[in-house]
Image 1 (cartoon, rainbow, N blue to C red):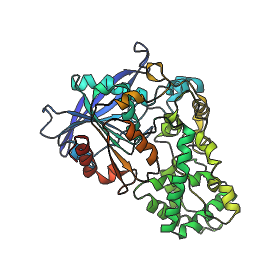
Image 2 (image 1 turned 135 degrees about the horizontal axis):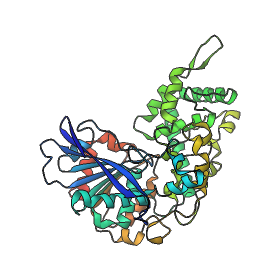
Image 3 (image 1 turned 90 degrees about the vertical axis):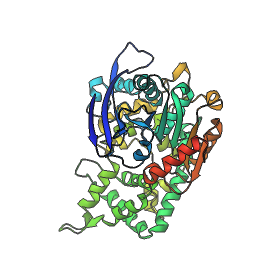
Length: 438
C-alpha cells in the first residue's frame, strides 16, 4: 500500500488479488485497484466504509482532486473506497491492446463473460472483509453502479449497511429489446427539446449528415465518421449541459479551404472526444450484456429495435425534409467498424451478442432475486430522474416498488449526471432518505 496526501485528504492505494471466476476460487486470478480516501486528521479514526461504484459499464472510477463534488460530503462520516471495477482503470484493464493476450475472439469473449455485475459484486465481497474486518459497508452506485448495487441486494445483503443509488435502478426482468424499445421515444423527446431550444441546429445537423453521406470522412485518430456515427452524438443529450455542448459543437462544423468548405479541425476534435471508446472500450463491448438474463442473447438489440423507429434512420431523414434525429446510449455493430479502438474486438463483440450462457450466481438464469428484494432489510434510497435519457423512469419506479423499504427521490431538477451536478446536496439527501430522516 502507498499513502500520500492531497488538500484535505489522505489517499491510500490498494491492490487486491481476486479470482477471475468466483465459482473457481482456485483458478486464474486478476488484480483489482482501489483508492482509499479519508479526511485529513481522521486517518486513524474508526470510520464506517463507503464504496463507490462508477457508472458504465467500462469506466474507471473518477479521479478526484481533494474533496471535490460529493466526496467532500461523504468524508464527513465515511472512509471512502473508490474502486476501479474489473477491466477498467488500473484493475487488469481489458482493451484492444490487452485482450489478445487471452487468445482469439472466443477466448476473449469467454474471459469477458466474467466482467458483469455479478463478478463486480463478488469482488466487493472478497475485498470487504480485508478492509472492514467483516463489518458491512455502504454502497453508493451511480448509473450502472446502481445496477450492481441492486444485484448486491439480491445476492449478498449481509455485506451491506446502506445502499444509495443515483440514476441506476434497473428493470428486474426487461429484455434488452424491451429496454431499447422504451429508450428510443425518450431519446426522441430529448432531440426535439434540443431543436426547440436551438432551432438553427436542425439545418446544421442535416448539412453535416449530408456532407458525411457524400464524403468518406476519416478523423485524425482513424475514426470513420459516417452519418450514423454522427447521429450518436445524441449521447450528449442525457447530461445536464449536453444540449449546449452539442449546439456549440455543431456551430463550429465547417471552415472554408482552397478546396471548398470542409469539416473543421475543431469540430473533428470535439467529435473524437465525444465518440471515441479508446478510454472505455468495455462500455461498447459489454453494454448490452448488462441486460442479458433468462438465457436469451442480446443479438444487437439496439440495432434491431431501431428499425421500429424510422425517424432514427439517417438515410430516410436525408431523403425527406424532416430533422435528423440523434441517437442516444446505444451500441451498434457499425461501432466496431468506425472506431479504431473497437475494430480489433469486432468478432469478440459478435460472440458476446450471441451468448446465452452468462454466468449467474447460484446457477440461476436471472441477475436479480426478486424474492430477496421483496424481503429486503437493508436501508436503501434511490434518486430517480424524472425524464432520464439513459435509464427508463417507469422501469426504475417499478423496481423501486419491488424492493422492500427502498425510498425514492424523483426529480427533474437534474439529468443523469445529478450526482456530479448536485454534488453534496444529492448525497446528503439520499443519506437522509435511507435513514428515514427526510
